Length: 119
Image 1 (cartoon, helix red, strand yellow):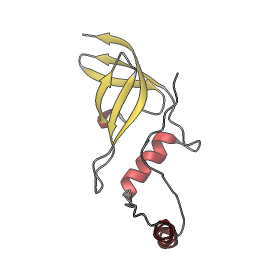
Image 2: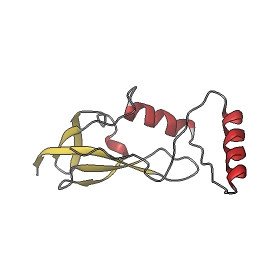
Image 3: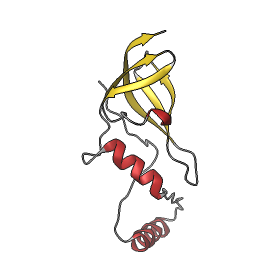
């Protein structure tokens, strides 16, 4: 098993006061002379990530089967999210999921082991 960052090139921040957080980030960037782009996630994306990651903010391994070309996740955090799965890499045991539409299309990788494929 490997552990990887879900958004490797990004820092994800959570705050109850969005305006203050944005102000503080911009102040810090101005002080060091760099500009950073702040990407906000939509409420749908936030709910999706909270459902996927849970309270531990960790995506566990899921297991499932492919029955007549249809993926059915039988256990794990991807259960119920089959519609979001865009691609499955059975060799690496990864599923690529598309987050709900926000301003930008984002993809998330999550562990998915296909136990059986029935044709």
